[in-house]
Length: 622
Image 1 (cartoon, rainbow, N blue to C red):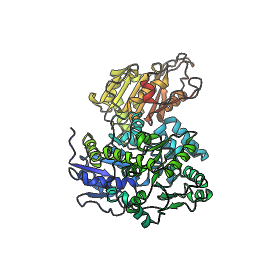
Image 2: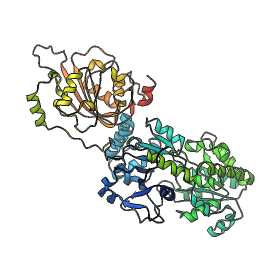
Image 3: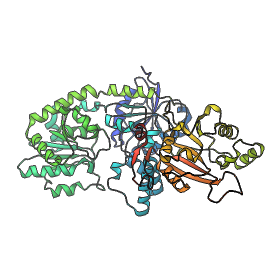
Image 4: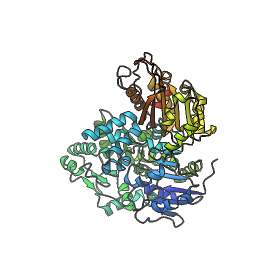
């Protein structure tokens, strides 16, 4: 059994921030305090928190940064959502490994806020490359050059790889999210259901008519409600279209949109008017907690449609189901995991609109039907979504964290590298005669950092290469893992990923399939790792792949690397060499940007491009 930590540091917004994650964590705090001292770090401009126990130590980000070392040995928990309220924590999250609670699998908007929303197109392009390799880089360049950004990009490109890779442990609310993150190769993922809000118990379903009277909601007709932000992905337009047809058939109802509008994204009032539903629809705007629950319990059933899904688990849905309300959802992502008898689940297919129309008609007319589903939902939530159980699971996961002493991570764009001085390299060269002096450009170019905790050495000249790494760069033998060029393609025994690589091989070692070989190198490295690849070119035999410098650079980019610098020079000066003979050394300084690889870049295998996750491609043995 995991010991619960005595202290934790939690990065999360708090009430009165109008944010579901803030409410969610605030409800957990009293249970945390039973066993654990809690420090909560909020953004510098956060309003003064309300209704939080005085036993909680609350720090603004700048206060935390001043005292950072005092918290180094405490487990860190980060609540990340796809919204501006969690942006402030990214700097710490990327440098201090911890437990990351991924509330939204899709973090595109969150990453967008750090670059594109501030006019930084280059930063956005880099973020796309970090997540999607060569394909992401191409999309970013398209945006920079032509201003093209696909309408569905924010839904299809989830932009979560950097945050996930920086986390020691991941906590999600659905198997859907766990499987998606697991496909990235993260080893430590736990599923903890979204808890049912204790605040809901203050409100009673039997007071439905009283709540309607307080809110001005008609008491003599069925009330349908959609809760939360009024956004396109909630499929409000589809609901309005169906309700318009039901109104024409003679059904009477009130449709409540209980949440804040996003007029820059979706003009809901125009759609309401166009469908002739002005007299049937109430748009509430933002609601405080009291009004939120009263509108929910004023309802006969809830429509909670989301397509496309960002992998989010809806706290609103959990609350509604736990209060015994029948809910209508799209049978996709986390919502597909709901038991069949606990919700009305609509497949997203060609029949979606007609099925929605049919179900709304039945739910409006059949009180027993909706009551049965609502009661099933309530029993299921009570059994599986207890806040005591979920809070304990959080603390157990935090107790498993091992990296609780440092503020260093190989997260992308977070490394501060140190290098040798040019003078020290020249002095060492004068005083030493390396045994591989004809193949010396890789260390003379001074591209390898000194600060990596471990270095993967890939070479068929192990003695000569490790001699330089030890004597010149100061790496101990314990820090060096040595493989031959052929052994790199064999399965790793421990699956460990290193922070740097020094590759010193003959080009013939990878000529048979350069991209596959480079993909194998990629899987051995942590995200953001540096790799110095030195290729000796002592005659190039015929190959099915182009092996010139430009092609080699394109292969490296296809394999998920960015090429930071290239250096070339002769292996040895030989005045008798013929012009067509090759006697060169090519050195590439690379950064591992992504797990995504294009295993068939242009002009590689007849120009057929194929994008795959490296881990999937290589595990399949292709």
